[in-house]
Amino acid sequence: MKQFFRPNLKRTGRIARGVTGTLCLIAGIVLVDFVLWLGLIFVAAGLFAIYEALSGWCVARACGIRTKI
Image (cartoon, rainbow, N blue to C red; front, side, top):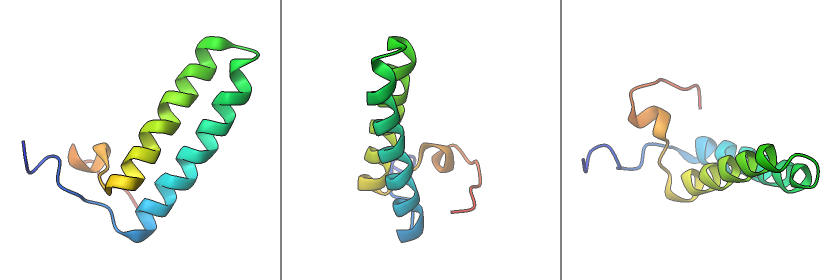
């Protein structure tokens, strides 16, 4: 389990996750006023992407999926 949660992102990947997370978070906050469930999904996805950026860990890479960044 320790191997699964070790950091696996470099600087560019962390920046990409941070930008994506911020955009999802902003979109989710805007969407909550119109469609509550969709806004909450975007907020959750944005917070998770920001967590990935801060920790340097990507769940897709940990599961063996190769990403470009």
